[in-house]
Image (cartoon, rainbow, N blue to C red):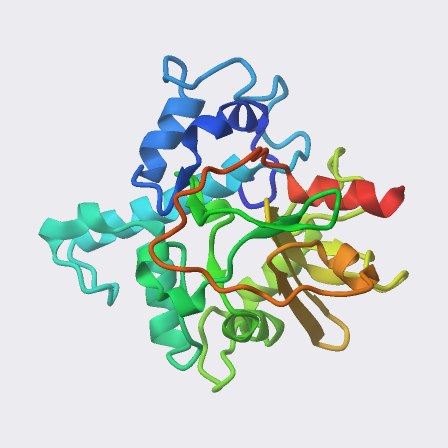
Length: 304
């Protein structure tokens, strides 16, 4: 249910508290502690809008916190496995299991299966300044404005930093049913097939609109009418990302921008060149930052 956005977790409360949790640079908070404060009765950030009133598994509602909870489950399982003596090739001893987090798992995945892919990380500290583009926007008068490099405790739901070339290793592996570009298996073909299956995701549950939800990935005909592409988009202020492919032709695309949505970029009369970040991150405040559920915002743009 977490991977299909049907766990009845409501992002309303999350967006209410976002201004107090976004920080310049990497957020030092732990995923589990943040989720406990937001979703567990008695938590510092808990409210009646932390959860929907309906039962889990009965309705779809896109949830950043649901995705973050799935990531927390993965890191918790990894910690227990290492503590029990299993080898996960993460370089941690049993005494260091508390250091394992979702970023560790993601970077280990790239390092072990796609060693030539390039730099990729949820944390700014793991990257050089030449690997990071500055999130930016344009004012009503057309003036470019940069945001600082920012982070948040629920980083697994949206702050993965990689170039399109690097991210293509993951997309190509998914397109090829779990086989990496060099031919070795990352996940089983049956697991990859299940991830594409809408019935394994949200099925026919209400709330999806016209974009059927599989496991994390979803189908959309935004890009080519009548052609259902599978993938995901994402966005924070100054950032927009899209990665989709046609399951029938195995042809896909990846577009990452630091200043406009793909729809806006495709219709723009001119494009500003990407500006690379200085390091350490800018000390300017996150001006007027209001997070948005990007997937819904894109749908509203499409239908208007």
